[in-house]
Length: 290
Ligand code: UD1
Image 1 (cartoon, helix red, strand yellow):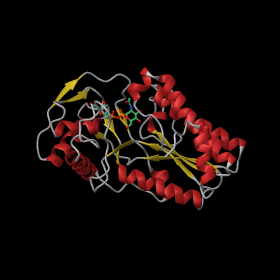
Image 2 (cartoon, protein in one colour; image 1 turned 90 degrees about the horizontal axis):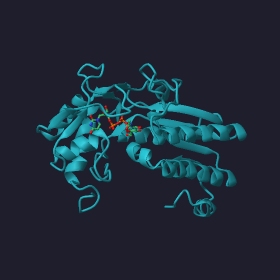
Image 3 (cartoon, helix red, strand yellow; image 1 turned 180 degrees about the horizontal axis):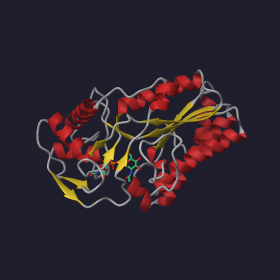
Image 4 (cartoon, protein in one colour; image 1 turned 60 degrees about the vertical axis):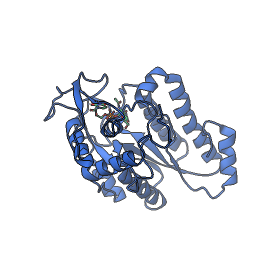
């Protein structure tokens, strides 16, 4: 475990492990609202860690990297579904821009050293937990994202879900997203590693990791009610600033090239999310985290 913005520590890590062949770069700050409050910290941390890691890789002859990017790099004015070739940019917050710029840093480095192989994985909305209930999502403070908010409401830690807008151009008026089980997301990384080690030519490849199906906020709420066997209180509120109505992937490139496809459905996502939340009502700590 090292601090990736610490160049010396990162350099030592690579020196101590000369067998490193490739890297999966997950590290980063990821809260949208916080990034608006603390843009300098977000740029410093997310760009700084990526640059430091690439420098250490360069100095130690490691030329393969998988980067955790996000659907947030797509411009909000695209038609759905989103393809890897859809327009990017026009991000609505600093977090989104850090992902956008990190993608660009990696692409630029491939131009400078064409022996590198870079895989950019654009995550849609990862949810759920490990089926064992041992590993799950434990956001600090009040959750910003939908699913942890619903599961915390289901166990009584929150009073009521605020549904942000019911006047979008969707079947029930609430926002539609492409939710993907965290297990499928993890499998996507394994397939990407195998691809890096196998067929991939040096260069940059981008893949959407999503299911291709969109579910609305109310559909998610009702699926979670089924998973926990009771009603979950909610109220309709105004739209959240910066939100778009609908966002879902075309994941066919990942299937075609990586041989990867999401296999877990909405039921399993909700069951595993509830299983984790029930077993860990206060998250990883004994005491509530806020
Ligand atoms: C958000 C981020 C995205 C980030 C992703 C990480 C924004 C604008 N986008 O995506 O950059 O990569 O999380 O997982 O924040 N909703 C409610 N009530 C809530 C919370 C959410 O109704 O309390 C609705 C939202 O309006 C949206 C849907 O639920 O329609 C999903 O929201 P969320 O889980 O925050 O994900 P995104 O906004 O899609």
